[in-house]
Length: 578
Image (cartoon, rainbow, N blue to C red; front, side, top):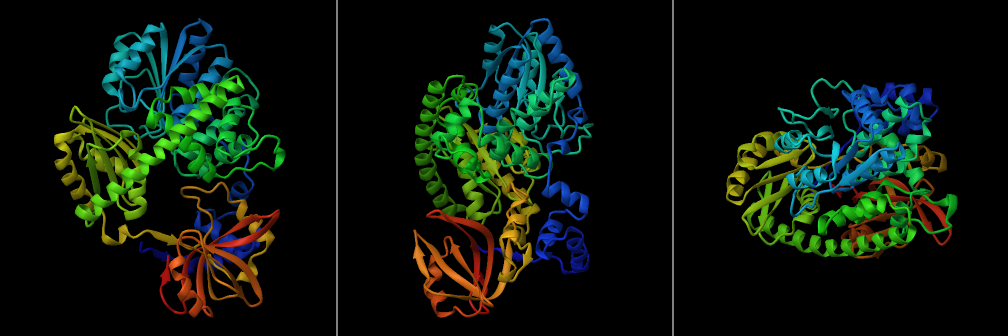
């Protein structure tokens, strides 16, 4: 795919030099910080040396103190409380966190997670009826509820008191819940708007503990669940999300939660008795732990995920984790098959569309979000992938690119939809199957109006130009202080011109290159994934290369060395191949 290479703004050069001097850091590090909007000594200190004390007070969230009082009163008089959570990683970790947290405070607590296939996303009348059968007085929704107006009305008429805890974009008319906690709702002045569902659940638990005068570590013992749900939900890893994921992953690597231990072992990430050397990256959550948890809701029912996350017996936890592994294998097979079918559909019918709407009666509902993400990755277009069931009802998952606000676009199609919900980058919809052609046309019209051709070319934003001799262990240590990497806080990307190859250029794996580069006497090993087709050209034109790369550690046979992970190569004066 063609990409735009975007270099740092040269007009800030003098200011960045002064910034680097104040930090006593290399200029490229100061440049990378500046590119992330970190332009002062204090903000750099908080970014590079963060602390959980930098988290905002939970009381800043509109209605949170009211929710705390409501929950504590229900606990005090012995009223039963139910948590209704979404079936994805964010929703299940939020449900488990609140279940464990409220139970530890003495609450009579229940949980309910809907079945994707029989109930769909969000609150369901079926779920509310089951909750009512347990004689519950207070219902707390987590990671859902903000768009469920009729279901909230049904629950209210049945006598339930309702707290909505949801981070998705609120509709113009809020549902008639007793209390709504959502940083995006009108009137909420909370300074960080991008908390995940489990992040909000953590804030609520923090508020409860503060109200009861408990120690800070009463809340932080659940921060491993927060990291898991937040990183898997692909929310921006900036602000509070970055803090929660950073410290939560450190705790996750040595978690005391039995269910998380079983999950880590099953995923092959943490070995028993590995001790303090255990380290996790956000990619481990996104590509290994997250899919395992999501597999339950995608292929069957997510109730077993909650059972795993709140497990108190290792044997039970290990059995559930193994079941999730089997379900994820099934999910992979379906994912591969439907992705291939969706790609053929694009190539044959919709290749020139700025907004993709793909549908089939043969597709499995459980993998639509994954397939939509793969379509965005391949074609860089906002994409909606829809499955049609035997009753001619359709459900879809949507994913988007940075310059296209998905929720706003779907709001302009709501007359064609039965329901929809989500945020800027991801959403879910349901609609009658007969409305799909009209929806496709409308969605395509909106994409044409809002996107120019330049918007459909992904940007490769270079943090700084660099000489190879500037890379050393201290430089790499400073890069590692930028972690955790993820959306809106990617690993720093560098560009170096005038590089030569040294030694043999190897083609490895399916389509990868392994080689060594040098510049002015400095050598580094390099790996270039999916650029194997350049092997012969690289052999012929190896004396004046341009490289775009990140810097990583390579661990091999008990040795650790710095390595360039090459994202693009320019042969002589030619254009970059990315």
